[in-house]
Length: 103
Image 1: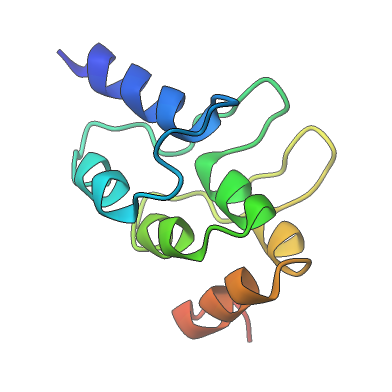
Image 2: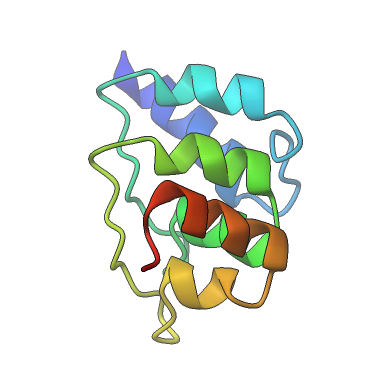
């Protein structure tokens, strides 16, 4: 029954309503699922990591960056990576630096 958890994660992190963006604990619980596809993209090519960076949700970003299967170099349809998006949002950029993504 992985489809409902997939739908929940997509609805939570990609939908325009963003019902879980402010709830990092719930996002962490969803991320504990090993069968969860963490690198899915929305209609604009944004991954959950890119959306967290773009929207400045550092707690959700921190939860996502802990996943080992995360594609760190994924580009959206506009050619932006999560690092590029985070560089615009200072709090998320600090998370990138502390996680070892930036040298």
